[in-house]
Image (cartoon, rainbow, N blue to C red; front, side, top):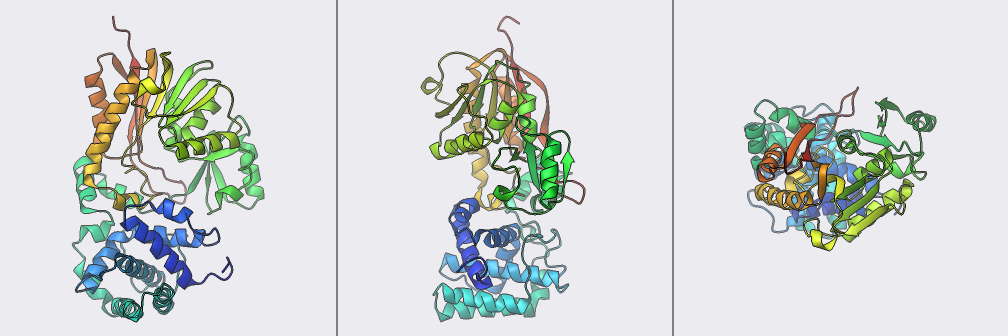
Length: 452
């Protein structure tokens, strides 16, 4: 099987297995990486689309089955097949009300309902699940065709089906953002555009734009350093990738490094650095002595790879595998002039590019990450020089991980002075004129002298 012979049934089968991994607590990205290269683009588009409609799929499964099949994998496969069928019916104008809140993912292929049913059944046969399984899939999908209007009526008041997020997530957003929660959920279900950050040490935005346009890509500049691509593309195949002319980075994330206002010659710490996008941006902005920490050696290796590609590695850059909280294991006692603390969080602000996050998180995770963030911030504060800056960053929209964390920081540290920063940035959906952006939180603190 190769890129030209992969069938829809094979794509459905691989997609179902990836979605099964999500149901057992694994990220969709991890599952996709394990696929053969020729299958990955098609499976990724199908699986992402499925995740953006997972609440609707679960509602349909519950509606269609009087009892759930014993195999979790089969449940996952049925849900995926139904989602694809729903996409095809919307595309052909037969079920416009089936998914009223979100547009179709433009990268997701469309098929006729008949083709989807046939190929879904064939996928079950390829998986060798037996005739009872293929018969069940066939019956459920055809029932959807017959009883679509009854299903739509049945889920009219089902918030999970309508918004395709867990019920606890919807409740929390309503409480945190009474006026904006619906816009946040809509943005989360809209596929993002590809945004590049130009490496100004290697190229100009004009040169990168020229290369992209010459290669047939539709794009436009966003300020001095960012470029938005209007078409989908394989990142590693874009001109300038191997030469280190740019990095992929969302507009919201690009705001991090400039907020530290670093100067040449300063000692800078990037805690929780992987995969290295913000690390690279710091090195692009000034000639600094930089230490990058991450407790995962595999993820830290990605930082090294990214810095090498961007031609930013030097003897002034130190990569350390360490837990940021255990400062005795990695800090030599010399204070840092600036610290970027991109602390672990629920990643609730980047659901539009990682739609599986909403279904992997649990409500209890918010409290756990909040405690972890406090421990990291308290440790890092000890290593900051008087007059130095610490930037708190989270890619979250939950207030416990944002403004609540910033206020708690001021309460715990009397020598902390809060400086101007964007605060909470809510996710925004892409449109014809703008690439949209992820949800982030930013707070900057200066360490005051004790006698002030």
